[in-house]
Length: 476
Image 1 (cartoon, one colour):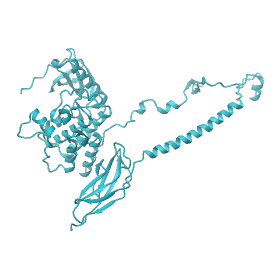
Image 2 (cartoon, rainbow, N blue to C red):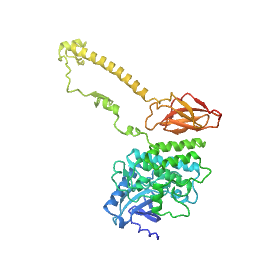
Image 3 (tube, rainbow, N blue to C red):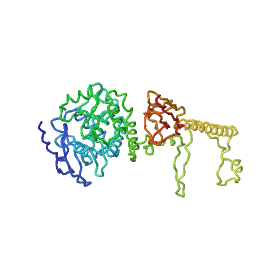
Image 4 (cartoon, rainbow, N blue to C red):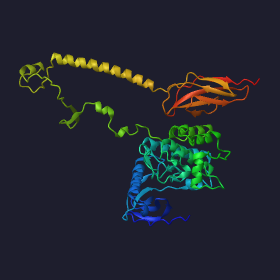
């Protein structure tokens, strides 16, 4: 099939056209030089023949989404968006390389690089999910590389919010990396389908082909759809790919969404566990904390403070004057000789007049003080109780048995939160990460296997369980 020629680059004020970078189904990408500030940028321009009201909405949504998310280190940065003089919408983006999406077919990524790329791109997807956004087109060609070698996720062109995904038609999906339920029109996108796409993308970077693509055979769209919805991916024919990594990817590409990792964050942690097993440094998770922006928002504590009126005294220093309450009346003694004499002044002096507080008001203030102290003690008790509930739980009832030649360790859920995981360590080996409360070990007759289980919460581990050792007796 002949490829179409790129469209005519538009005349953009403040930019000088350099050359064509690439073409897609809905847009062309050109290299421009921005005049101020001086830099090279990639400009994505919609094709005139496809500019409809729906496509314009998609393009505007992409601009807004990428602008909101592009502060993430693994999401392509968008500088600006507008409409050219000839009516074509365009995006001005950071100039990146498409090397990963181009070279993986001839030079598949090494395992350490693939794991690092997987963690970083998955971190971008997890960040989008926390913002309520599905990407819906995760694939190798949408992974670019910055000038500093950092992978970034691009092309949110068919992204949808999590709430809209169930009713929004998927437009322009990429079949080789789309989940079975998406291809069968059961959904246009979910978190589970994004996990599938991440697994398929990482598989592709390691295999040099998409998961259901068969070398030397028909790989038409209909053939691929048939294999994705009916079959299983071909094994990764690479001796340097550990079995644990292949298991993680196969789980991500399970036919049933419920069998996959429950979130992208869980997928990331399983990739990190593979890095640990290989003796590699863990690629950090790039997910913003929920409270990172509190410093720029209204301080919740500030809402409990008494707001005063700032005034300036004759010396020029600022002091806070308390705003009188409209619900309280302060009784002052009249400005009289008695008041002034009680303050130690003589009639006609300019000494300040001190208020004479009624006994009832004094008792009220004392009672309020006692109440404040009592509330403070109660609040401290509540805080202690809340903080105790956020402690990382520990497994206390680890048990083991031999079943059909396999040693099976089980335990009860000590109270995990949805994002918590178990780290199961066998002897001195690096721990395995999982959510299940069962762990199986194949052991030779006569061997003794010792296991400890620790709960991991947000990268921090709690107290490990007491070691449990089980011996597989020799066969009779």
